[in-house]
Length: 390
Image (cartoon, rainbow, N blue to C red; front, side, top):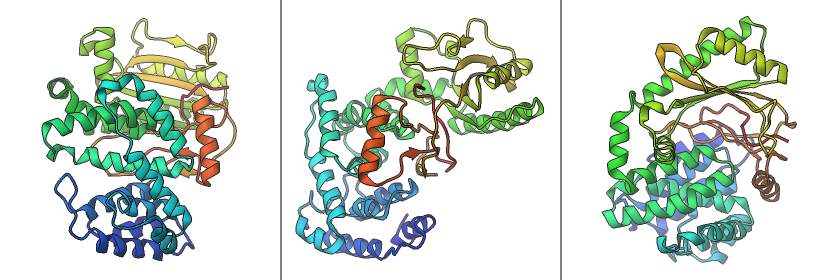
């Protein structure tokens, strides 16, 4: 997005009756203070700031967070002071920018990888306002997207830091689409040979697999409705590259035995409908022997309950299905991850209160920061998730 008008258009699409003039003031401010600065990618630094702010806006975050995204580099580059930010844009914006800068100043060494968990906890403590972490994650995502122009040593260092710190942090906050994006981008630079080989060996491109996902979802809705099953939601996604690579390494299996290159989740209202949905799927697509798992009659230790199956679906492609009963309550407001931001496709991961300790922390931090609790798919539609049900 080349100028502020595109950012304002996105923000105005959901920030109704909110004065967006601070966005224009923030843009003019960074244009003045960063006029001669260049991002590590070689592009003007202002372009990077706009991309970070756009990521936050397409996640439907509040105005202060978007403004902080535009301003997040001014303290780091020492072109403004905290008091100046507070006077011009308010205390909340100044605090978010200050917190983001303090996180940026934490140095990480891959030789201290065993300390990664302690550093992630430090980040969570430093980001008492959850918006600090959201700005930093959006910043890191943009850094990774443009990392290809950096020298090889920097690419490896930044990719390792992203894989060890920022991807797990995104997962802990329930932003699963960003975790997958960060992992795939890091994978590309940490294991370039394996990345290239896996990309070549996959039977189809990501875009083709995404098209297949949409076709199956459309077919599923028709089949379920024909059998008087009304799913709350059907979610599908192509499995991302790093996840496939991890499975190949961990299980020491060939690519042909990875059955879930595409995966689907059917959310229904009751346990009875779970089994009925499974029967509907098996009625048209034959299951792969040994790949049916019943975690309803035998729940996992964390009380996770669902039915898993792998079938030979349309076009003879193996697909994994999960049928999940809706066991949680409440309808949190929606925050949609970006659409069309990068090459990869991703879907939702929306922690709900009571699902797990990490998701309860997320809910608490969101309430403290006065932002919505729930992240949805990049398509902008709300969704449920498979985090353990209570």
